[in-house]
Length: 389
Image (cartoon, rainbow, N blue to C red):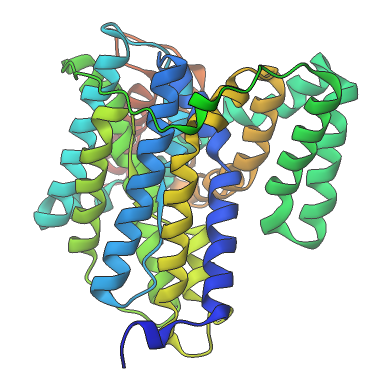
């Protein structure tokens, strides 16, 4: 049977929905992450475009090659990490260097099994605690938005809560729609320029530093692998597919490496939206569901081409409202990470130490708090195990 004969409107519908939810649900987090790490508006637009094109093309290529519904996404937890890290010495060029190091590590983890095993050996409680600490600042943003502008923030939050009650996947896109309406009614938008419709990639010459490699590349690699790539494989397996993880990880690393010089921090296996493409809602026949991931990839490419328009308007809007939407998007992942961090009683204190050090946002020796949080947690974890022995 040819690939075109496998096409179905049901799969196409599931794929387009997955792309819409994946993009609308977290692009604000990506833009805030790039802005927080020191990217200019043009560089942030370029990064959003590069990520969208990378995850779209990677998803299309892998789905065609494997005939599996392989969904690719950007690293939303990684973007939250960037936002809490802040500008580096060396500016955005140093961040791009760290993105490239992270991408190389992802490729290596797919090609060299020991590295993949080392990542998997990091206690899940500590990886989740670091992830929760990274996301805490964003998750506080909706509360801070209510304090700063209750008349504007409350309708957004109430919409999110009501939609979440009945259809959780649509909650963040619905909140985003209300945010747009609120902003249109209360703020003056920047004038539209036809040039915004032209993709404008910005090539950033990377700078490599040990501080950026330790403070950004290593935590970005860990959260991307632990919270995206490994769960993404688990979603495929839960739906009856049995891919070989290594080549998939390596492919996401290659596309991350290609997007990094243009501002993309990382792409990876999708987890939440992957369930839409790999599950029975995409098609009754599991062998035809890969078309859902193909269509999703096509839409990501289209979204990438209009990234300059999205970026110009988003960055011109009230920051507290955009942060509020980003925070709402991360509440679910934050809850999952926090639950995973505290699940094992014996590891609970080490996880709490990891969480509070990471959430503190304190940098030392030019290295961000995520690294120090994980290091502190691992130290206490090792001490606990040694005493127990």
